[in-house]
Image (cartoon, rainbow, N blue to C red; front, side):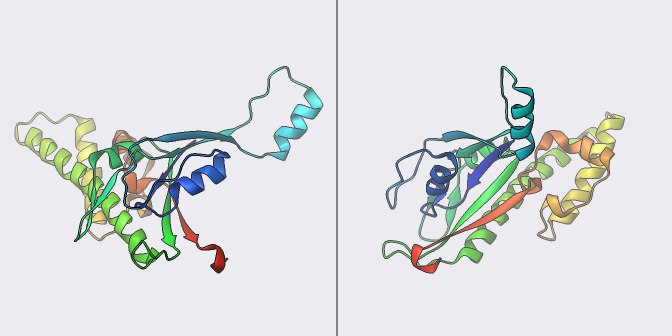
Length: 209
């Protein structure tokens, strides 16, 4: 499984990455923009696997692992709002699940923390990124329909995308929409970022633990 850490700058993504992977990646300085991507693989604790190894004594052991990515999600901040680069969405589309890190601690060098606002901001950007892709694809499918070049697969895809678009226009992510197995197959290649499992992690100050 591939898990991507996402969030605004200075929220503690690399700190969490280091804690999960036991690495010592240098933290970003305040106000900077981190371009590099950090990768780590951690084994999944499983007592059943440990017991099987103890009983069978295999020559090779291959426990289940989770690949964790920190980075590849560049965000610039200006006076009015954050700007999400295209690499933000290119990176997270390759993930199986996302961990959204929000800042729940205060620092004199940073604005007052507002984790609920920040989580909503990222969720909105993920949703808008999917809507942009859907609208572009629908435009091409409708053009093919007018030219009578639509295949049965494209017709099924068109109906599913319309269903998803209507759902998302209500500010609901793809993961909250129930799709049939056939509908899921028709849009699987889109890898919707708002359709991925999402865990929100609030990074608290040590004094608040």
